[in-house]
Amino acid sequence: MLPRHHDPVIAITTAPGRGAVGIVRASGRDLKPLVDALFARALAPRHATYLPFTDAQGQVIDRGLALYFPAPHSYTGEDVLELQAHGGPVVLQLLLARCLEAGRAMGLRLAEPGEFTERAYLNDKLDLAQAEAVSDLIDASTEAAARSASRSLSGAFSDEVHALRDRLISLRMLVEATLDFPEEEIDFLQKADALGRLRAIDADVAGVLSRARQGALLREGMQIVLAGQPNVGKSSLLNALAGAELAIVTPIPGTTRDKVSETIQIDGVPVHVIDTAGLREAGDEVERIGIARSWEAIERADAVLFLHDLTRRGEPAYDAAEAVIAARLPPPRRDGERIVHVYSKSDLAAMASLSDDGGHHLALSARTGDGLDALRRLLLQLAGWHASPDGLFIARARHVDALRHTAEHLALALELATSPDPALDLLAEELRLAQTALSQITGEFTSDDLLGEIFSRFCIGK
Image 1 (cartoon, rainbow, N blue to C red):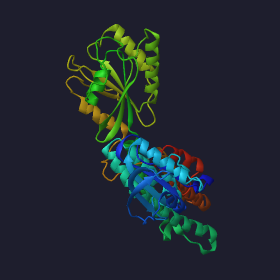
Image 2 (image 1 turned 120 degrees about the vertical axis):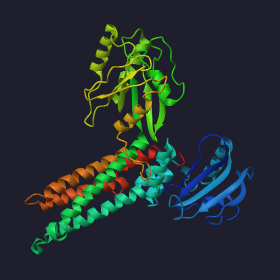
Image 3 (image 1 turned 180 degrees about the vertical axis):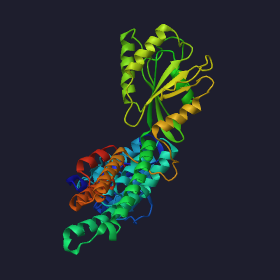
Image 4 (image 1 turned 90 degrees about the horizontal axis):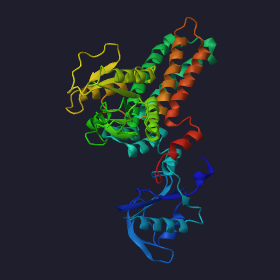
């Protein structure tokens, strides 16, 4: 622990603004002096006590409930005091100031972002994956994401990681026993079926990795950029996907001069759709900046919908501009093509046939809705979504990275174990590295810098 973790801390834990109830929470190793300074009576542990909250002169600030949770039976594992008052900003600030004044002698200070949950992690009330799930549950943008975050918070993800870790430890014991006692001639690959166990662990890690990628998609969503020349139907498509008039649609080229963003849901997956300025030679400085931002968004996108206007195909100037844009679009990534050619206004002009060049091509009409369902299915396919959210756990990019590194070390271990003359010392090292990578998920092996990065993203009071 760092020195700051020994300080008692306090913060308003409810969201800013007005509400029926607001909560001020304090946590520390010994909060009895604070309780004695604030109240003239003792507080029964884990019982709500209705009483007045007074300032230093004895004037009543508000009346509400006080709850005292002695360590270790609290959220943080320390003594916790919660004061529930009316949820007015002024009332809560007065109550917070009074507590800081009463706790000055004991070093009471304002909590940093995420510090209550950080202390819960440091005091073994939550592991790191569960602690992150607290923030993910608060920030969930879809019902599926909230349910998956709740599963992670309950320990479903951590339980699977711990079970895999324990199996790895058991396998390491077999290998290292052979290294330590070669005279015993323990043929662990056959007698203990170590190779079969290694293959089973490798398969199970692959399964967890697949579900973690799905959970990460629920958390992060997919970023889609609508690109193309002016007046090809980008804003109309955004409005059709969102089911609302978000972007201005006019026959005037260049109506959209900056990015317009909206998050929609497709089967519970957040999809962040960005409508961009039409790609052409800029007519003025404002449009030039908007087009530059469009290309920046295209480079970062998970998928790009390149819109083509069916009513203008065959016009020399239009086709020439299409070729210029196509030449500048980003190449396919290792995980596949991310450019989708969308032929818009299919209600006004028919398309003889879609391209068979192996890319993604579809025709649609934003006005009638024809083709929108096919586009939604294609977007989920590009995102890699193939599972029902039931049973999924929320995951972050670092979890996916840790599982991928685990799988890489297990693949090397399998290669060593199946060689004619296995190098057992190298095999043991790969298993150790796999275990270390896996343990980073729940925090058994975690740097202080990573902890600071994780908890600094939490809100104040959580």
